[in-house]
Length: 290
Length: 257
Image (tube, rainbow over all chains, first blue to last red):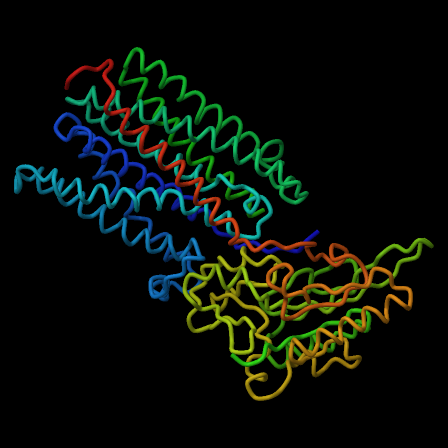
């Protein structure tokens, strides 16, 4: 039995992983809509960029509050260490914040009528910010993989999983707001629903990859930790919450929605996706640190 | 860079007196803590933010049915390829000119990534200072021509301090002697620079297999995962991005808005 220690990152960090991923995912979805057709999907992009900024705002606060010496938060961006996912994540958060701010600002200028069409600058910010958004969604998973914690170190798809969760929750959040606004965006809602379905498929594959890679590692400690999730105290949250209610059910609802679009169905599926995405990350965090 | 300094802990000579643990506490002004009940003389179970040297008391069953003491004064390994140093996002953790690994207490902001990244569970978080703590290899002493307090205090020379390339042949000779005496499991842990983590600057002579002492057989550098994990993330990003573009491009129900 090796004597490892845990950082004991608190629940707030789970919230950050969720919000950061959601922000990155929503930005990417909004940008995809912008790139395909800036007029037709105007509402999707508009809601996506505002949502991104909203989800991102609490993130730096959460991270700073959680530091042992919060006043030294700037030390994170006085160093550039490619071997530390946390260092790279800090830079990604900084870069993404700039992009998210600009995208929301351009959208606001259009809304206020100060500019007629800023889709050109939005495309540039969207493409550059999209890379940062992907990075922000994925890096927490890579960060966990680069620790000595037995389950995390043996799971190689955590980055891929967190990215897919970011995309599915980001898309779901956009869909939910579009439904709530309930105007002129039925086509947009259907398309965002399709994007959610595709992200959910990748998410489920990445979850399977996570379980498989830990199981095939042969490490007793890793298997014991994994057992907390698949058969132990977190199994209800994992199988019932994250997988069945949070991924498989909304996937089925989404497929039904592909055939027969319905705003109500999309709203229900979106709530489930948000809950499921949060649970996936929380369970992996809680078991990994136990 | 100066010649690499090292500590060689020969567990076959340890008598469990804990002079090293006390000397470390005294010199580094580490203060009191509430003891753990471990079921043996060992205290504490783990390294803590106030225990940088920890004498492990391990009872190993002998074929006769009796228990044999295995005593080991454990410490930060000052890995040549250190998980904590790689993980540090602030540059607070650094390598000294002597090859030791140290945490700059004025820079550390208490993110605790190093605590999770240490393959040996050495780095600990101090709630009072809000920073990460571990053995400094008595950084103040070695920069003034002295050895670490633990090595100085050890009455049996179980802890030896010196240049790494001087200590290794001595350690190898000692393994041969012990094997000739019948300690068939005697082995060095972390002496091989080509071995795990690039070799440990605090290396050990063990009388049983590493796992008996709670040491991993073949510790892996956590950062080795970054490449593969990132590639898989990029794959996921490509699929998600492509999926989003396809979703908006498709012709299907919903029609024009």
